[in-house]
Amino acid sequence: MDKLFKIGQIINTHGIKGEVKVYPLTEDINKFKRLKTVLVGGVEKNILGVKFQKDRVILKIEGIDSMNDAETYKEKYIEISIDKEPELPPDTYYVSDLKQCTVYDTGEKEIGRVFDVISTPNNDVYWIQQPKEVLIPVLRDIVLSIDINLKKIIIKPVGQWQDED
Image 1 (cartoon, helix red, strand yellow):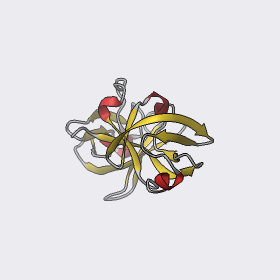
Image 2 (cartoon, rainbow, N blue to C red):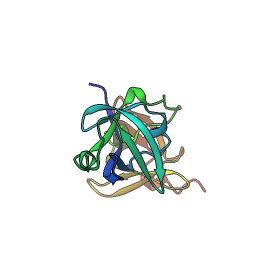
Image 3 (cartoon, rainbow, N blue to C red):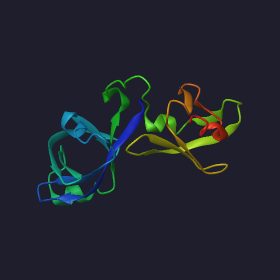
């Protein structure tokens, strides 16, 4: 089966005609406008309409025709297959792939597995929780290589991060 991405979660009903209110789990909420079909609770459904309301997406989905129907979909995830995603630019990775990687320094010392990726205005940060918490700024002079296939990220040793002055 293809790799699936959660792009939203149905959090509530919207109106009486079966629309659902979706909390987006994607940085690009306009993605909802481009999609013709999505998986809802693992079942492929056509998207019949898309509206935006503040930081939420309102979807009209095939087969959800009343408020009662919509109620049964609360908390279900909206997913898409990776093949519906555009190809990533060079040196860009899916967070789900990065979270499967283990970080090592250039001396092959294991730092830990990426728990999450934090987006900040200047750069992303890899958050390692185990064996001890480490926040790694994703900068070219710190993160030296990423190999998603080997699930391995190589960084400059932590003690050398400030030597760039």
